[in-house]
Length: 319
Image (cartoon, rainbow, N blue to C red; front, top):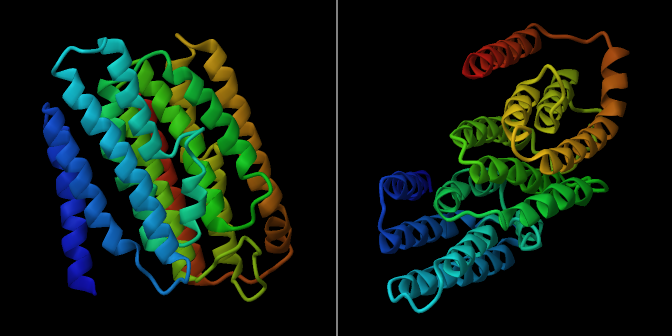
């Protein structure tokens, strides 16, 4: 299984690199298809819901790709206005990304994926659609940004499934990236890469300890619970975590042009942070009342804090 997966990952990464260096609409469509067909075999797992997730993902992505290809063909004929066709391409990419109101499939299929597949879905699979979105974007996307910021925060409010929480968190973060795209800021790629790193680190750690729900079991060590809490708070934008610095930098760029959208983004982040804090509250109390602390746990925490410090320094240097 290791060698086939490496081949699929190679195709995934290659399709992303090729798309970023292409200006042809047909070639971009080919990269989208290679990307999708490379990911689908990796979605299969022992989970009984995996087949439903594969079928749903294929139908959604195929529909969006068909819209993109058809619109690209019409674009060469000048039968419709450029503004309308650009909006259609933008909508097809929003469907692929799972932004609201086209988001319902994302939390649904997340439940049927393994953590390794979920990490790819929430990171690498978003790069090509976001790149195309950076080319074909308009002020119409502001409506979808506000909807995604709202749904992404409220949708994860009563969730205890880690997969669904990460899916709704992804929808919320997409609103930030899309806003940066709308104002033609190059910081969107930096934001996406930092978010992807946090997601990959969090999911790999959760997968290692086979956690499916945020129940902070007693058999989990204090270090495990603390680490997961800190990473989730970083996703929520808790200062002085790297997630806060990432959002703060983005907000300083966005507020210069879109004050209304900035307010929605801030409110959605506060709601996200609230339910992350609520889920972590019990664990934090348990951790502070316990005296158990191993040497390896101390080293792991030091490494994590060093990463946070270096990341904050790099972000400040970009401002």
